[in-house]
Length: 313
Figure: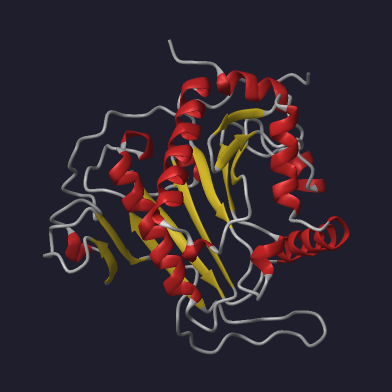
């Protein structure tokens, strides 16, 4: 109940279908870094539905010169070797993820799967993350709908900790922690937003952000690059439904959508299944959050789920 300023509501401008200055719009293909994949494959230069190109400002690159030295026993330095790509989700400048039809959503999911597989095939890569930054508060620099993929040559510490907890649970209880969480949420019900045959969308019991949602498989899935088209289609539809619910309930906030995957370690996916995390960006972190790494929420997860479930009239 702390006093709270009004959430920052982004001022969304009416966007054109085509922006001649946008490097992701059709006709501007030569303005992007080298293309790495497209749907349909083998089509002509300007005949595409989804394109994947290298990131013009990559955080990770395949080859790097030497890195500066560091003081022994105090600092460690490693080259930022890896992969960083942009997945252009469609041709039209003003059609976001929730505007896509079922076939277009499946195209995006197929591109995710193919690029995940390509990154995972590089023996240097230890972890792959796919994410979508929507709007300025989510740190998006280009308005044209797109996602990004990063392949890292290391396992992030937070992920290593998550995997360790999940393996400990699996050893004690005989099953994946995430699957148990999903089963518990469906049984309890108050934090569930939507459920389908294969997926559950819910506000986690202890979210980091107000109105955060997880879209998780209801059963242990294979590694993401081995998921079949039927599962991808239902996953894409579940994501579209969840983002639509967030936009309806919160007035179209900026957001991040992240594919949280286990590291590329043998057997990791059996203990730590993948899931999507959707984070509305309505408030900036304050000194307390940055100082101690604990977030203060102003909405209970049960209240958030109830609002997200509310039908559109």
